[in-house]
Image (cartoon, rainbow, N blue to C red; front, side, top):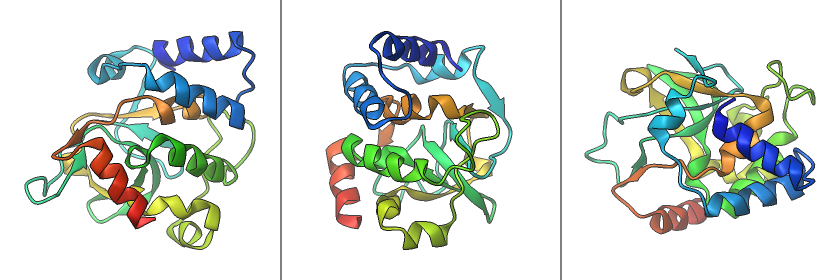
Length: 193
């Protein structure tokens, strides 16, 4: 857990916010609007757990330099993903940054129903697959988030986001979109859904 996550968790506790509730997601979403986060400093914090590869069902953040960035209309160079599984040369991840905060909250609500348990500890993962994402109406927001990441283009180790911090990480303003504005990207995401 990073110092930033601890600080936000403490503020939520002091405000009487119940973790993993709609009230909690709304509180973190509102809090995130006013924040500025230094991605480099966040990744260097001692408390961050770094991994060399993704684990299906876990949440990660990392620096990324896409292979086809010259031809992509836009991309996120600091994805926040939920690993869906392995893929040719890398892995598939749901990059939550591609959704505006309100839709991100709804998507997270649906995803929380898929967890492997309700302990919210190191054993808790998201139990998702492409077929599940396609068939569940409450997970319909996955389309703009579903991305193939190539291991050779990951520019940092993967920072594991522990289950108790999923809500905090989901709403932190850490997206680093290139080649298009956030409003353009969110508009395209809405049309994909």
